[in-house]
Length: 432
Image 1: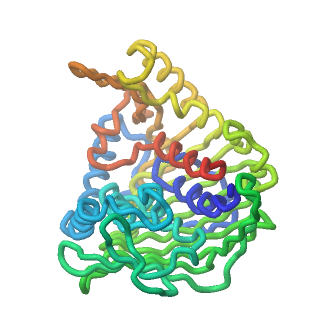
Image 2: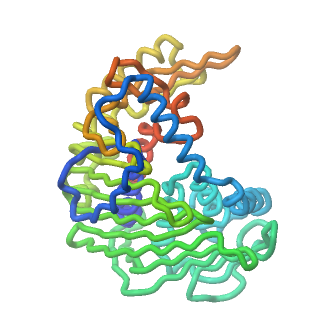
């Protein structure tokens, strides 16, 4: 069954790299992906700013960015997600056990939409949408809430969930069309060969009464025998829009994304992961789970916020970053003392900093204004403590640092380590 997860990985692994500070650089080789149109810089910057001016520039950009999001525009989808979780969150999906393990449920899907609008990124949305690609035909039908599970009430060529929302009747509809790619795999546990048909086109809509909360179109072009894939996503949730394109081969994964608000593009990004045999099932199936990092080499990406801030980064060794992933967060529930946790986290930060070079540029200026580095952060309360590797901005003018929380309150520019964690978790689906 490992090979079936390749579809999920093909989409998710590239998409999880798209966040602004994930990783990456100015590598000219983008794997055939068409980069998004550059965002024009409204305020060109000349020279290297002083640390004080640079901090003000970052903070002003964050304020302008957040100012583009009006919570009232996304209030309805957030309310719907809360309502679905409260009223239908305990319902299982028939024959699949706990629906918490699947995006194929109104609860998980609406929560992903709410997470997307809350964080101003589409990583949660992508995780929800690609699940519908797997074994689509097995799930078709109309489902309505039962006492303990979603019950199939009638047949359909689509996957349709119908339920009552806070403001009217809701329908979550997933349609598939186009020629399917066929994936065949041998399941050792059950001693059987299983075939899965992956539809080329998947369309997802969520409506409540006359309101369309989400409309997402996914195009899959899979060539499993050729170890390659191409996926494009074009979606809207409330007044937010995303366009993403990703491509993969044994040697490279690449991705391009643009995020818009009310039709205005405000964030673009490209990313690349290099490796070997990354989509080769013959190699993957013979790997132990702990050995998958041997397929990774390096990575690169860039991102642009409103033309004001650009991040370009290079990752020297993806494997080294992955290996320290479990040593970036500790708390008093772990087996380590506080001092031991600090030392482990400090060493993890040293590894991250030696393998990721992330430079920050302002307003189209090619002068490095700052860099992103990691430091341990200790939160110590009366009966609870935690240690976490957190990114900080190190300004070029004087080497002073500023936390992302201080510089970018409410804006998740600095979640680099979480993007790496998401990427690795996506890849691990191959080995389940």
